[in-house]
Image (cartoon, rainbow, N blue to C red; front, side, top):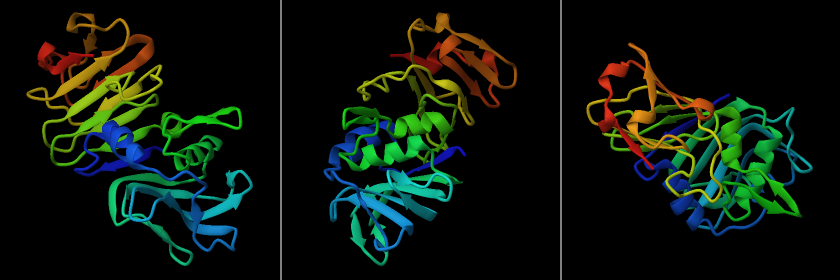
Length: 258
């Protein structure tokens, strides 16, 4: 199930929010806590500092097994990032303000997801990290595994390609769509591919696609075809399909190379 991102004005520059706002402000380092901690079946897990940055996971149920969530009996529903974190044993974790909500689709957690939750709660690591001498994946790896659908606000947004197949919807405003392996310099470890991505509502009159992959440094390097749904072919890195946009309506003004 694709992870569906619903942005707010705070997270409207998605990767900047995750790296420079939430992760930078997340000072908690530990295992987090489930609601009803004396049971093995839960509906809620979270991590954060009281009144500070936090993350909350909801599921139906969240069955704990040694090493993470049971990958057979658990269903993961919703992941929220924000501020005003609080916890009590009866109700579990909550946020006063939700900056970013990700619908996980009620699917079973994968092993990658379990590792990603661990690295996330231990210092807010989204790219994964090294623990016990082992390199563990993070949430960017999970998003690459399942793909994302990113839904922007009615204002100006910056939506980003991860390594899987992503569907990007600006949803109004003059938006930026970023296909840069280095994530505008926000990533410690660059992505290796962009996958086969789609922009559902690109406006050729005023919106911009940012491309940062080796060998594509200028508009003349791009292969763009299609009379109804333009396809930008980036070779082994992947492709970008623009729904409802003809190749002939695009120009160098629609692209920036980083």
